Image (tube, rainbow, N blue to C red; front, side, top):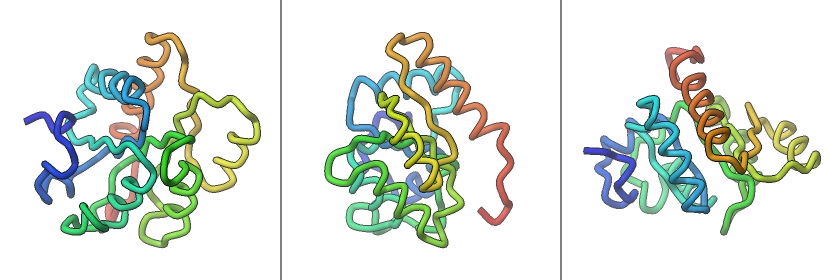
Length: 161
């Protein structure tokens, strides 16, 4: 079963507890390209895609449709769009980094914004990386693929996490 094709409400709780990548992206084309790039390196097996900031917070803190999920099972990395409906990417980042249980989760900001203020604010709030979405597919695919390889395979995380 390919978990990237299922909607969150279709997933079983044990599947949700094994999520390695939380992709928070409201643009379906960008989400599809991101998932495709990660699949190229076999890094998308345990990925869940949500399309707004509120869904991301609900997933991370095991609320509402994710209330049956174990909140101690956190993703290895969150790929977070900056401009999201309902709750902005910066607000998701702020809440994630303000919570003792979730502040250790690496967050990679994905944005088409090259505004210096967005970059500075993201890093001030605790982003681990900021990737500007390239317009050209090959560049975007390579950037996402390399980022996934780093955070899922090469990055060392504490055993208790």
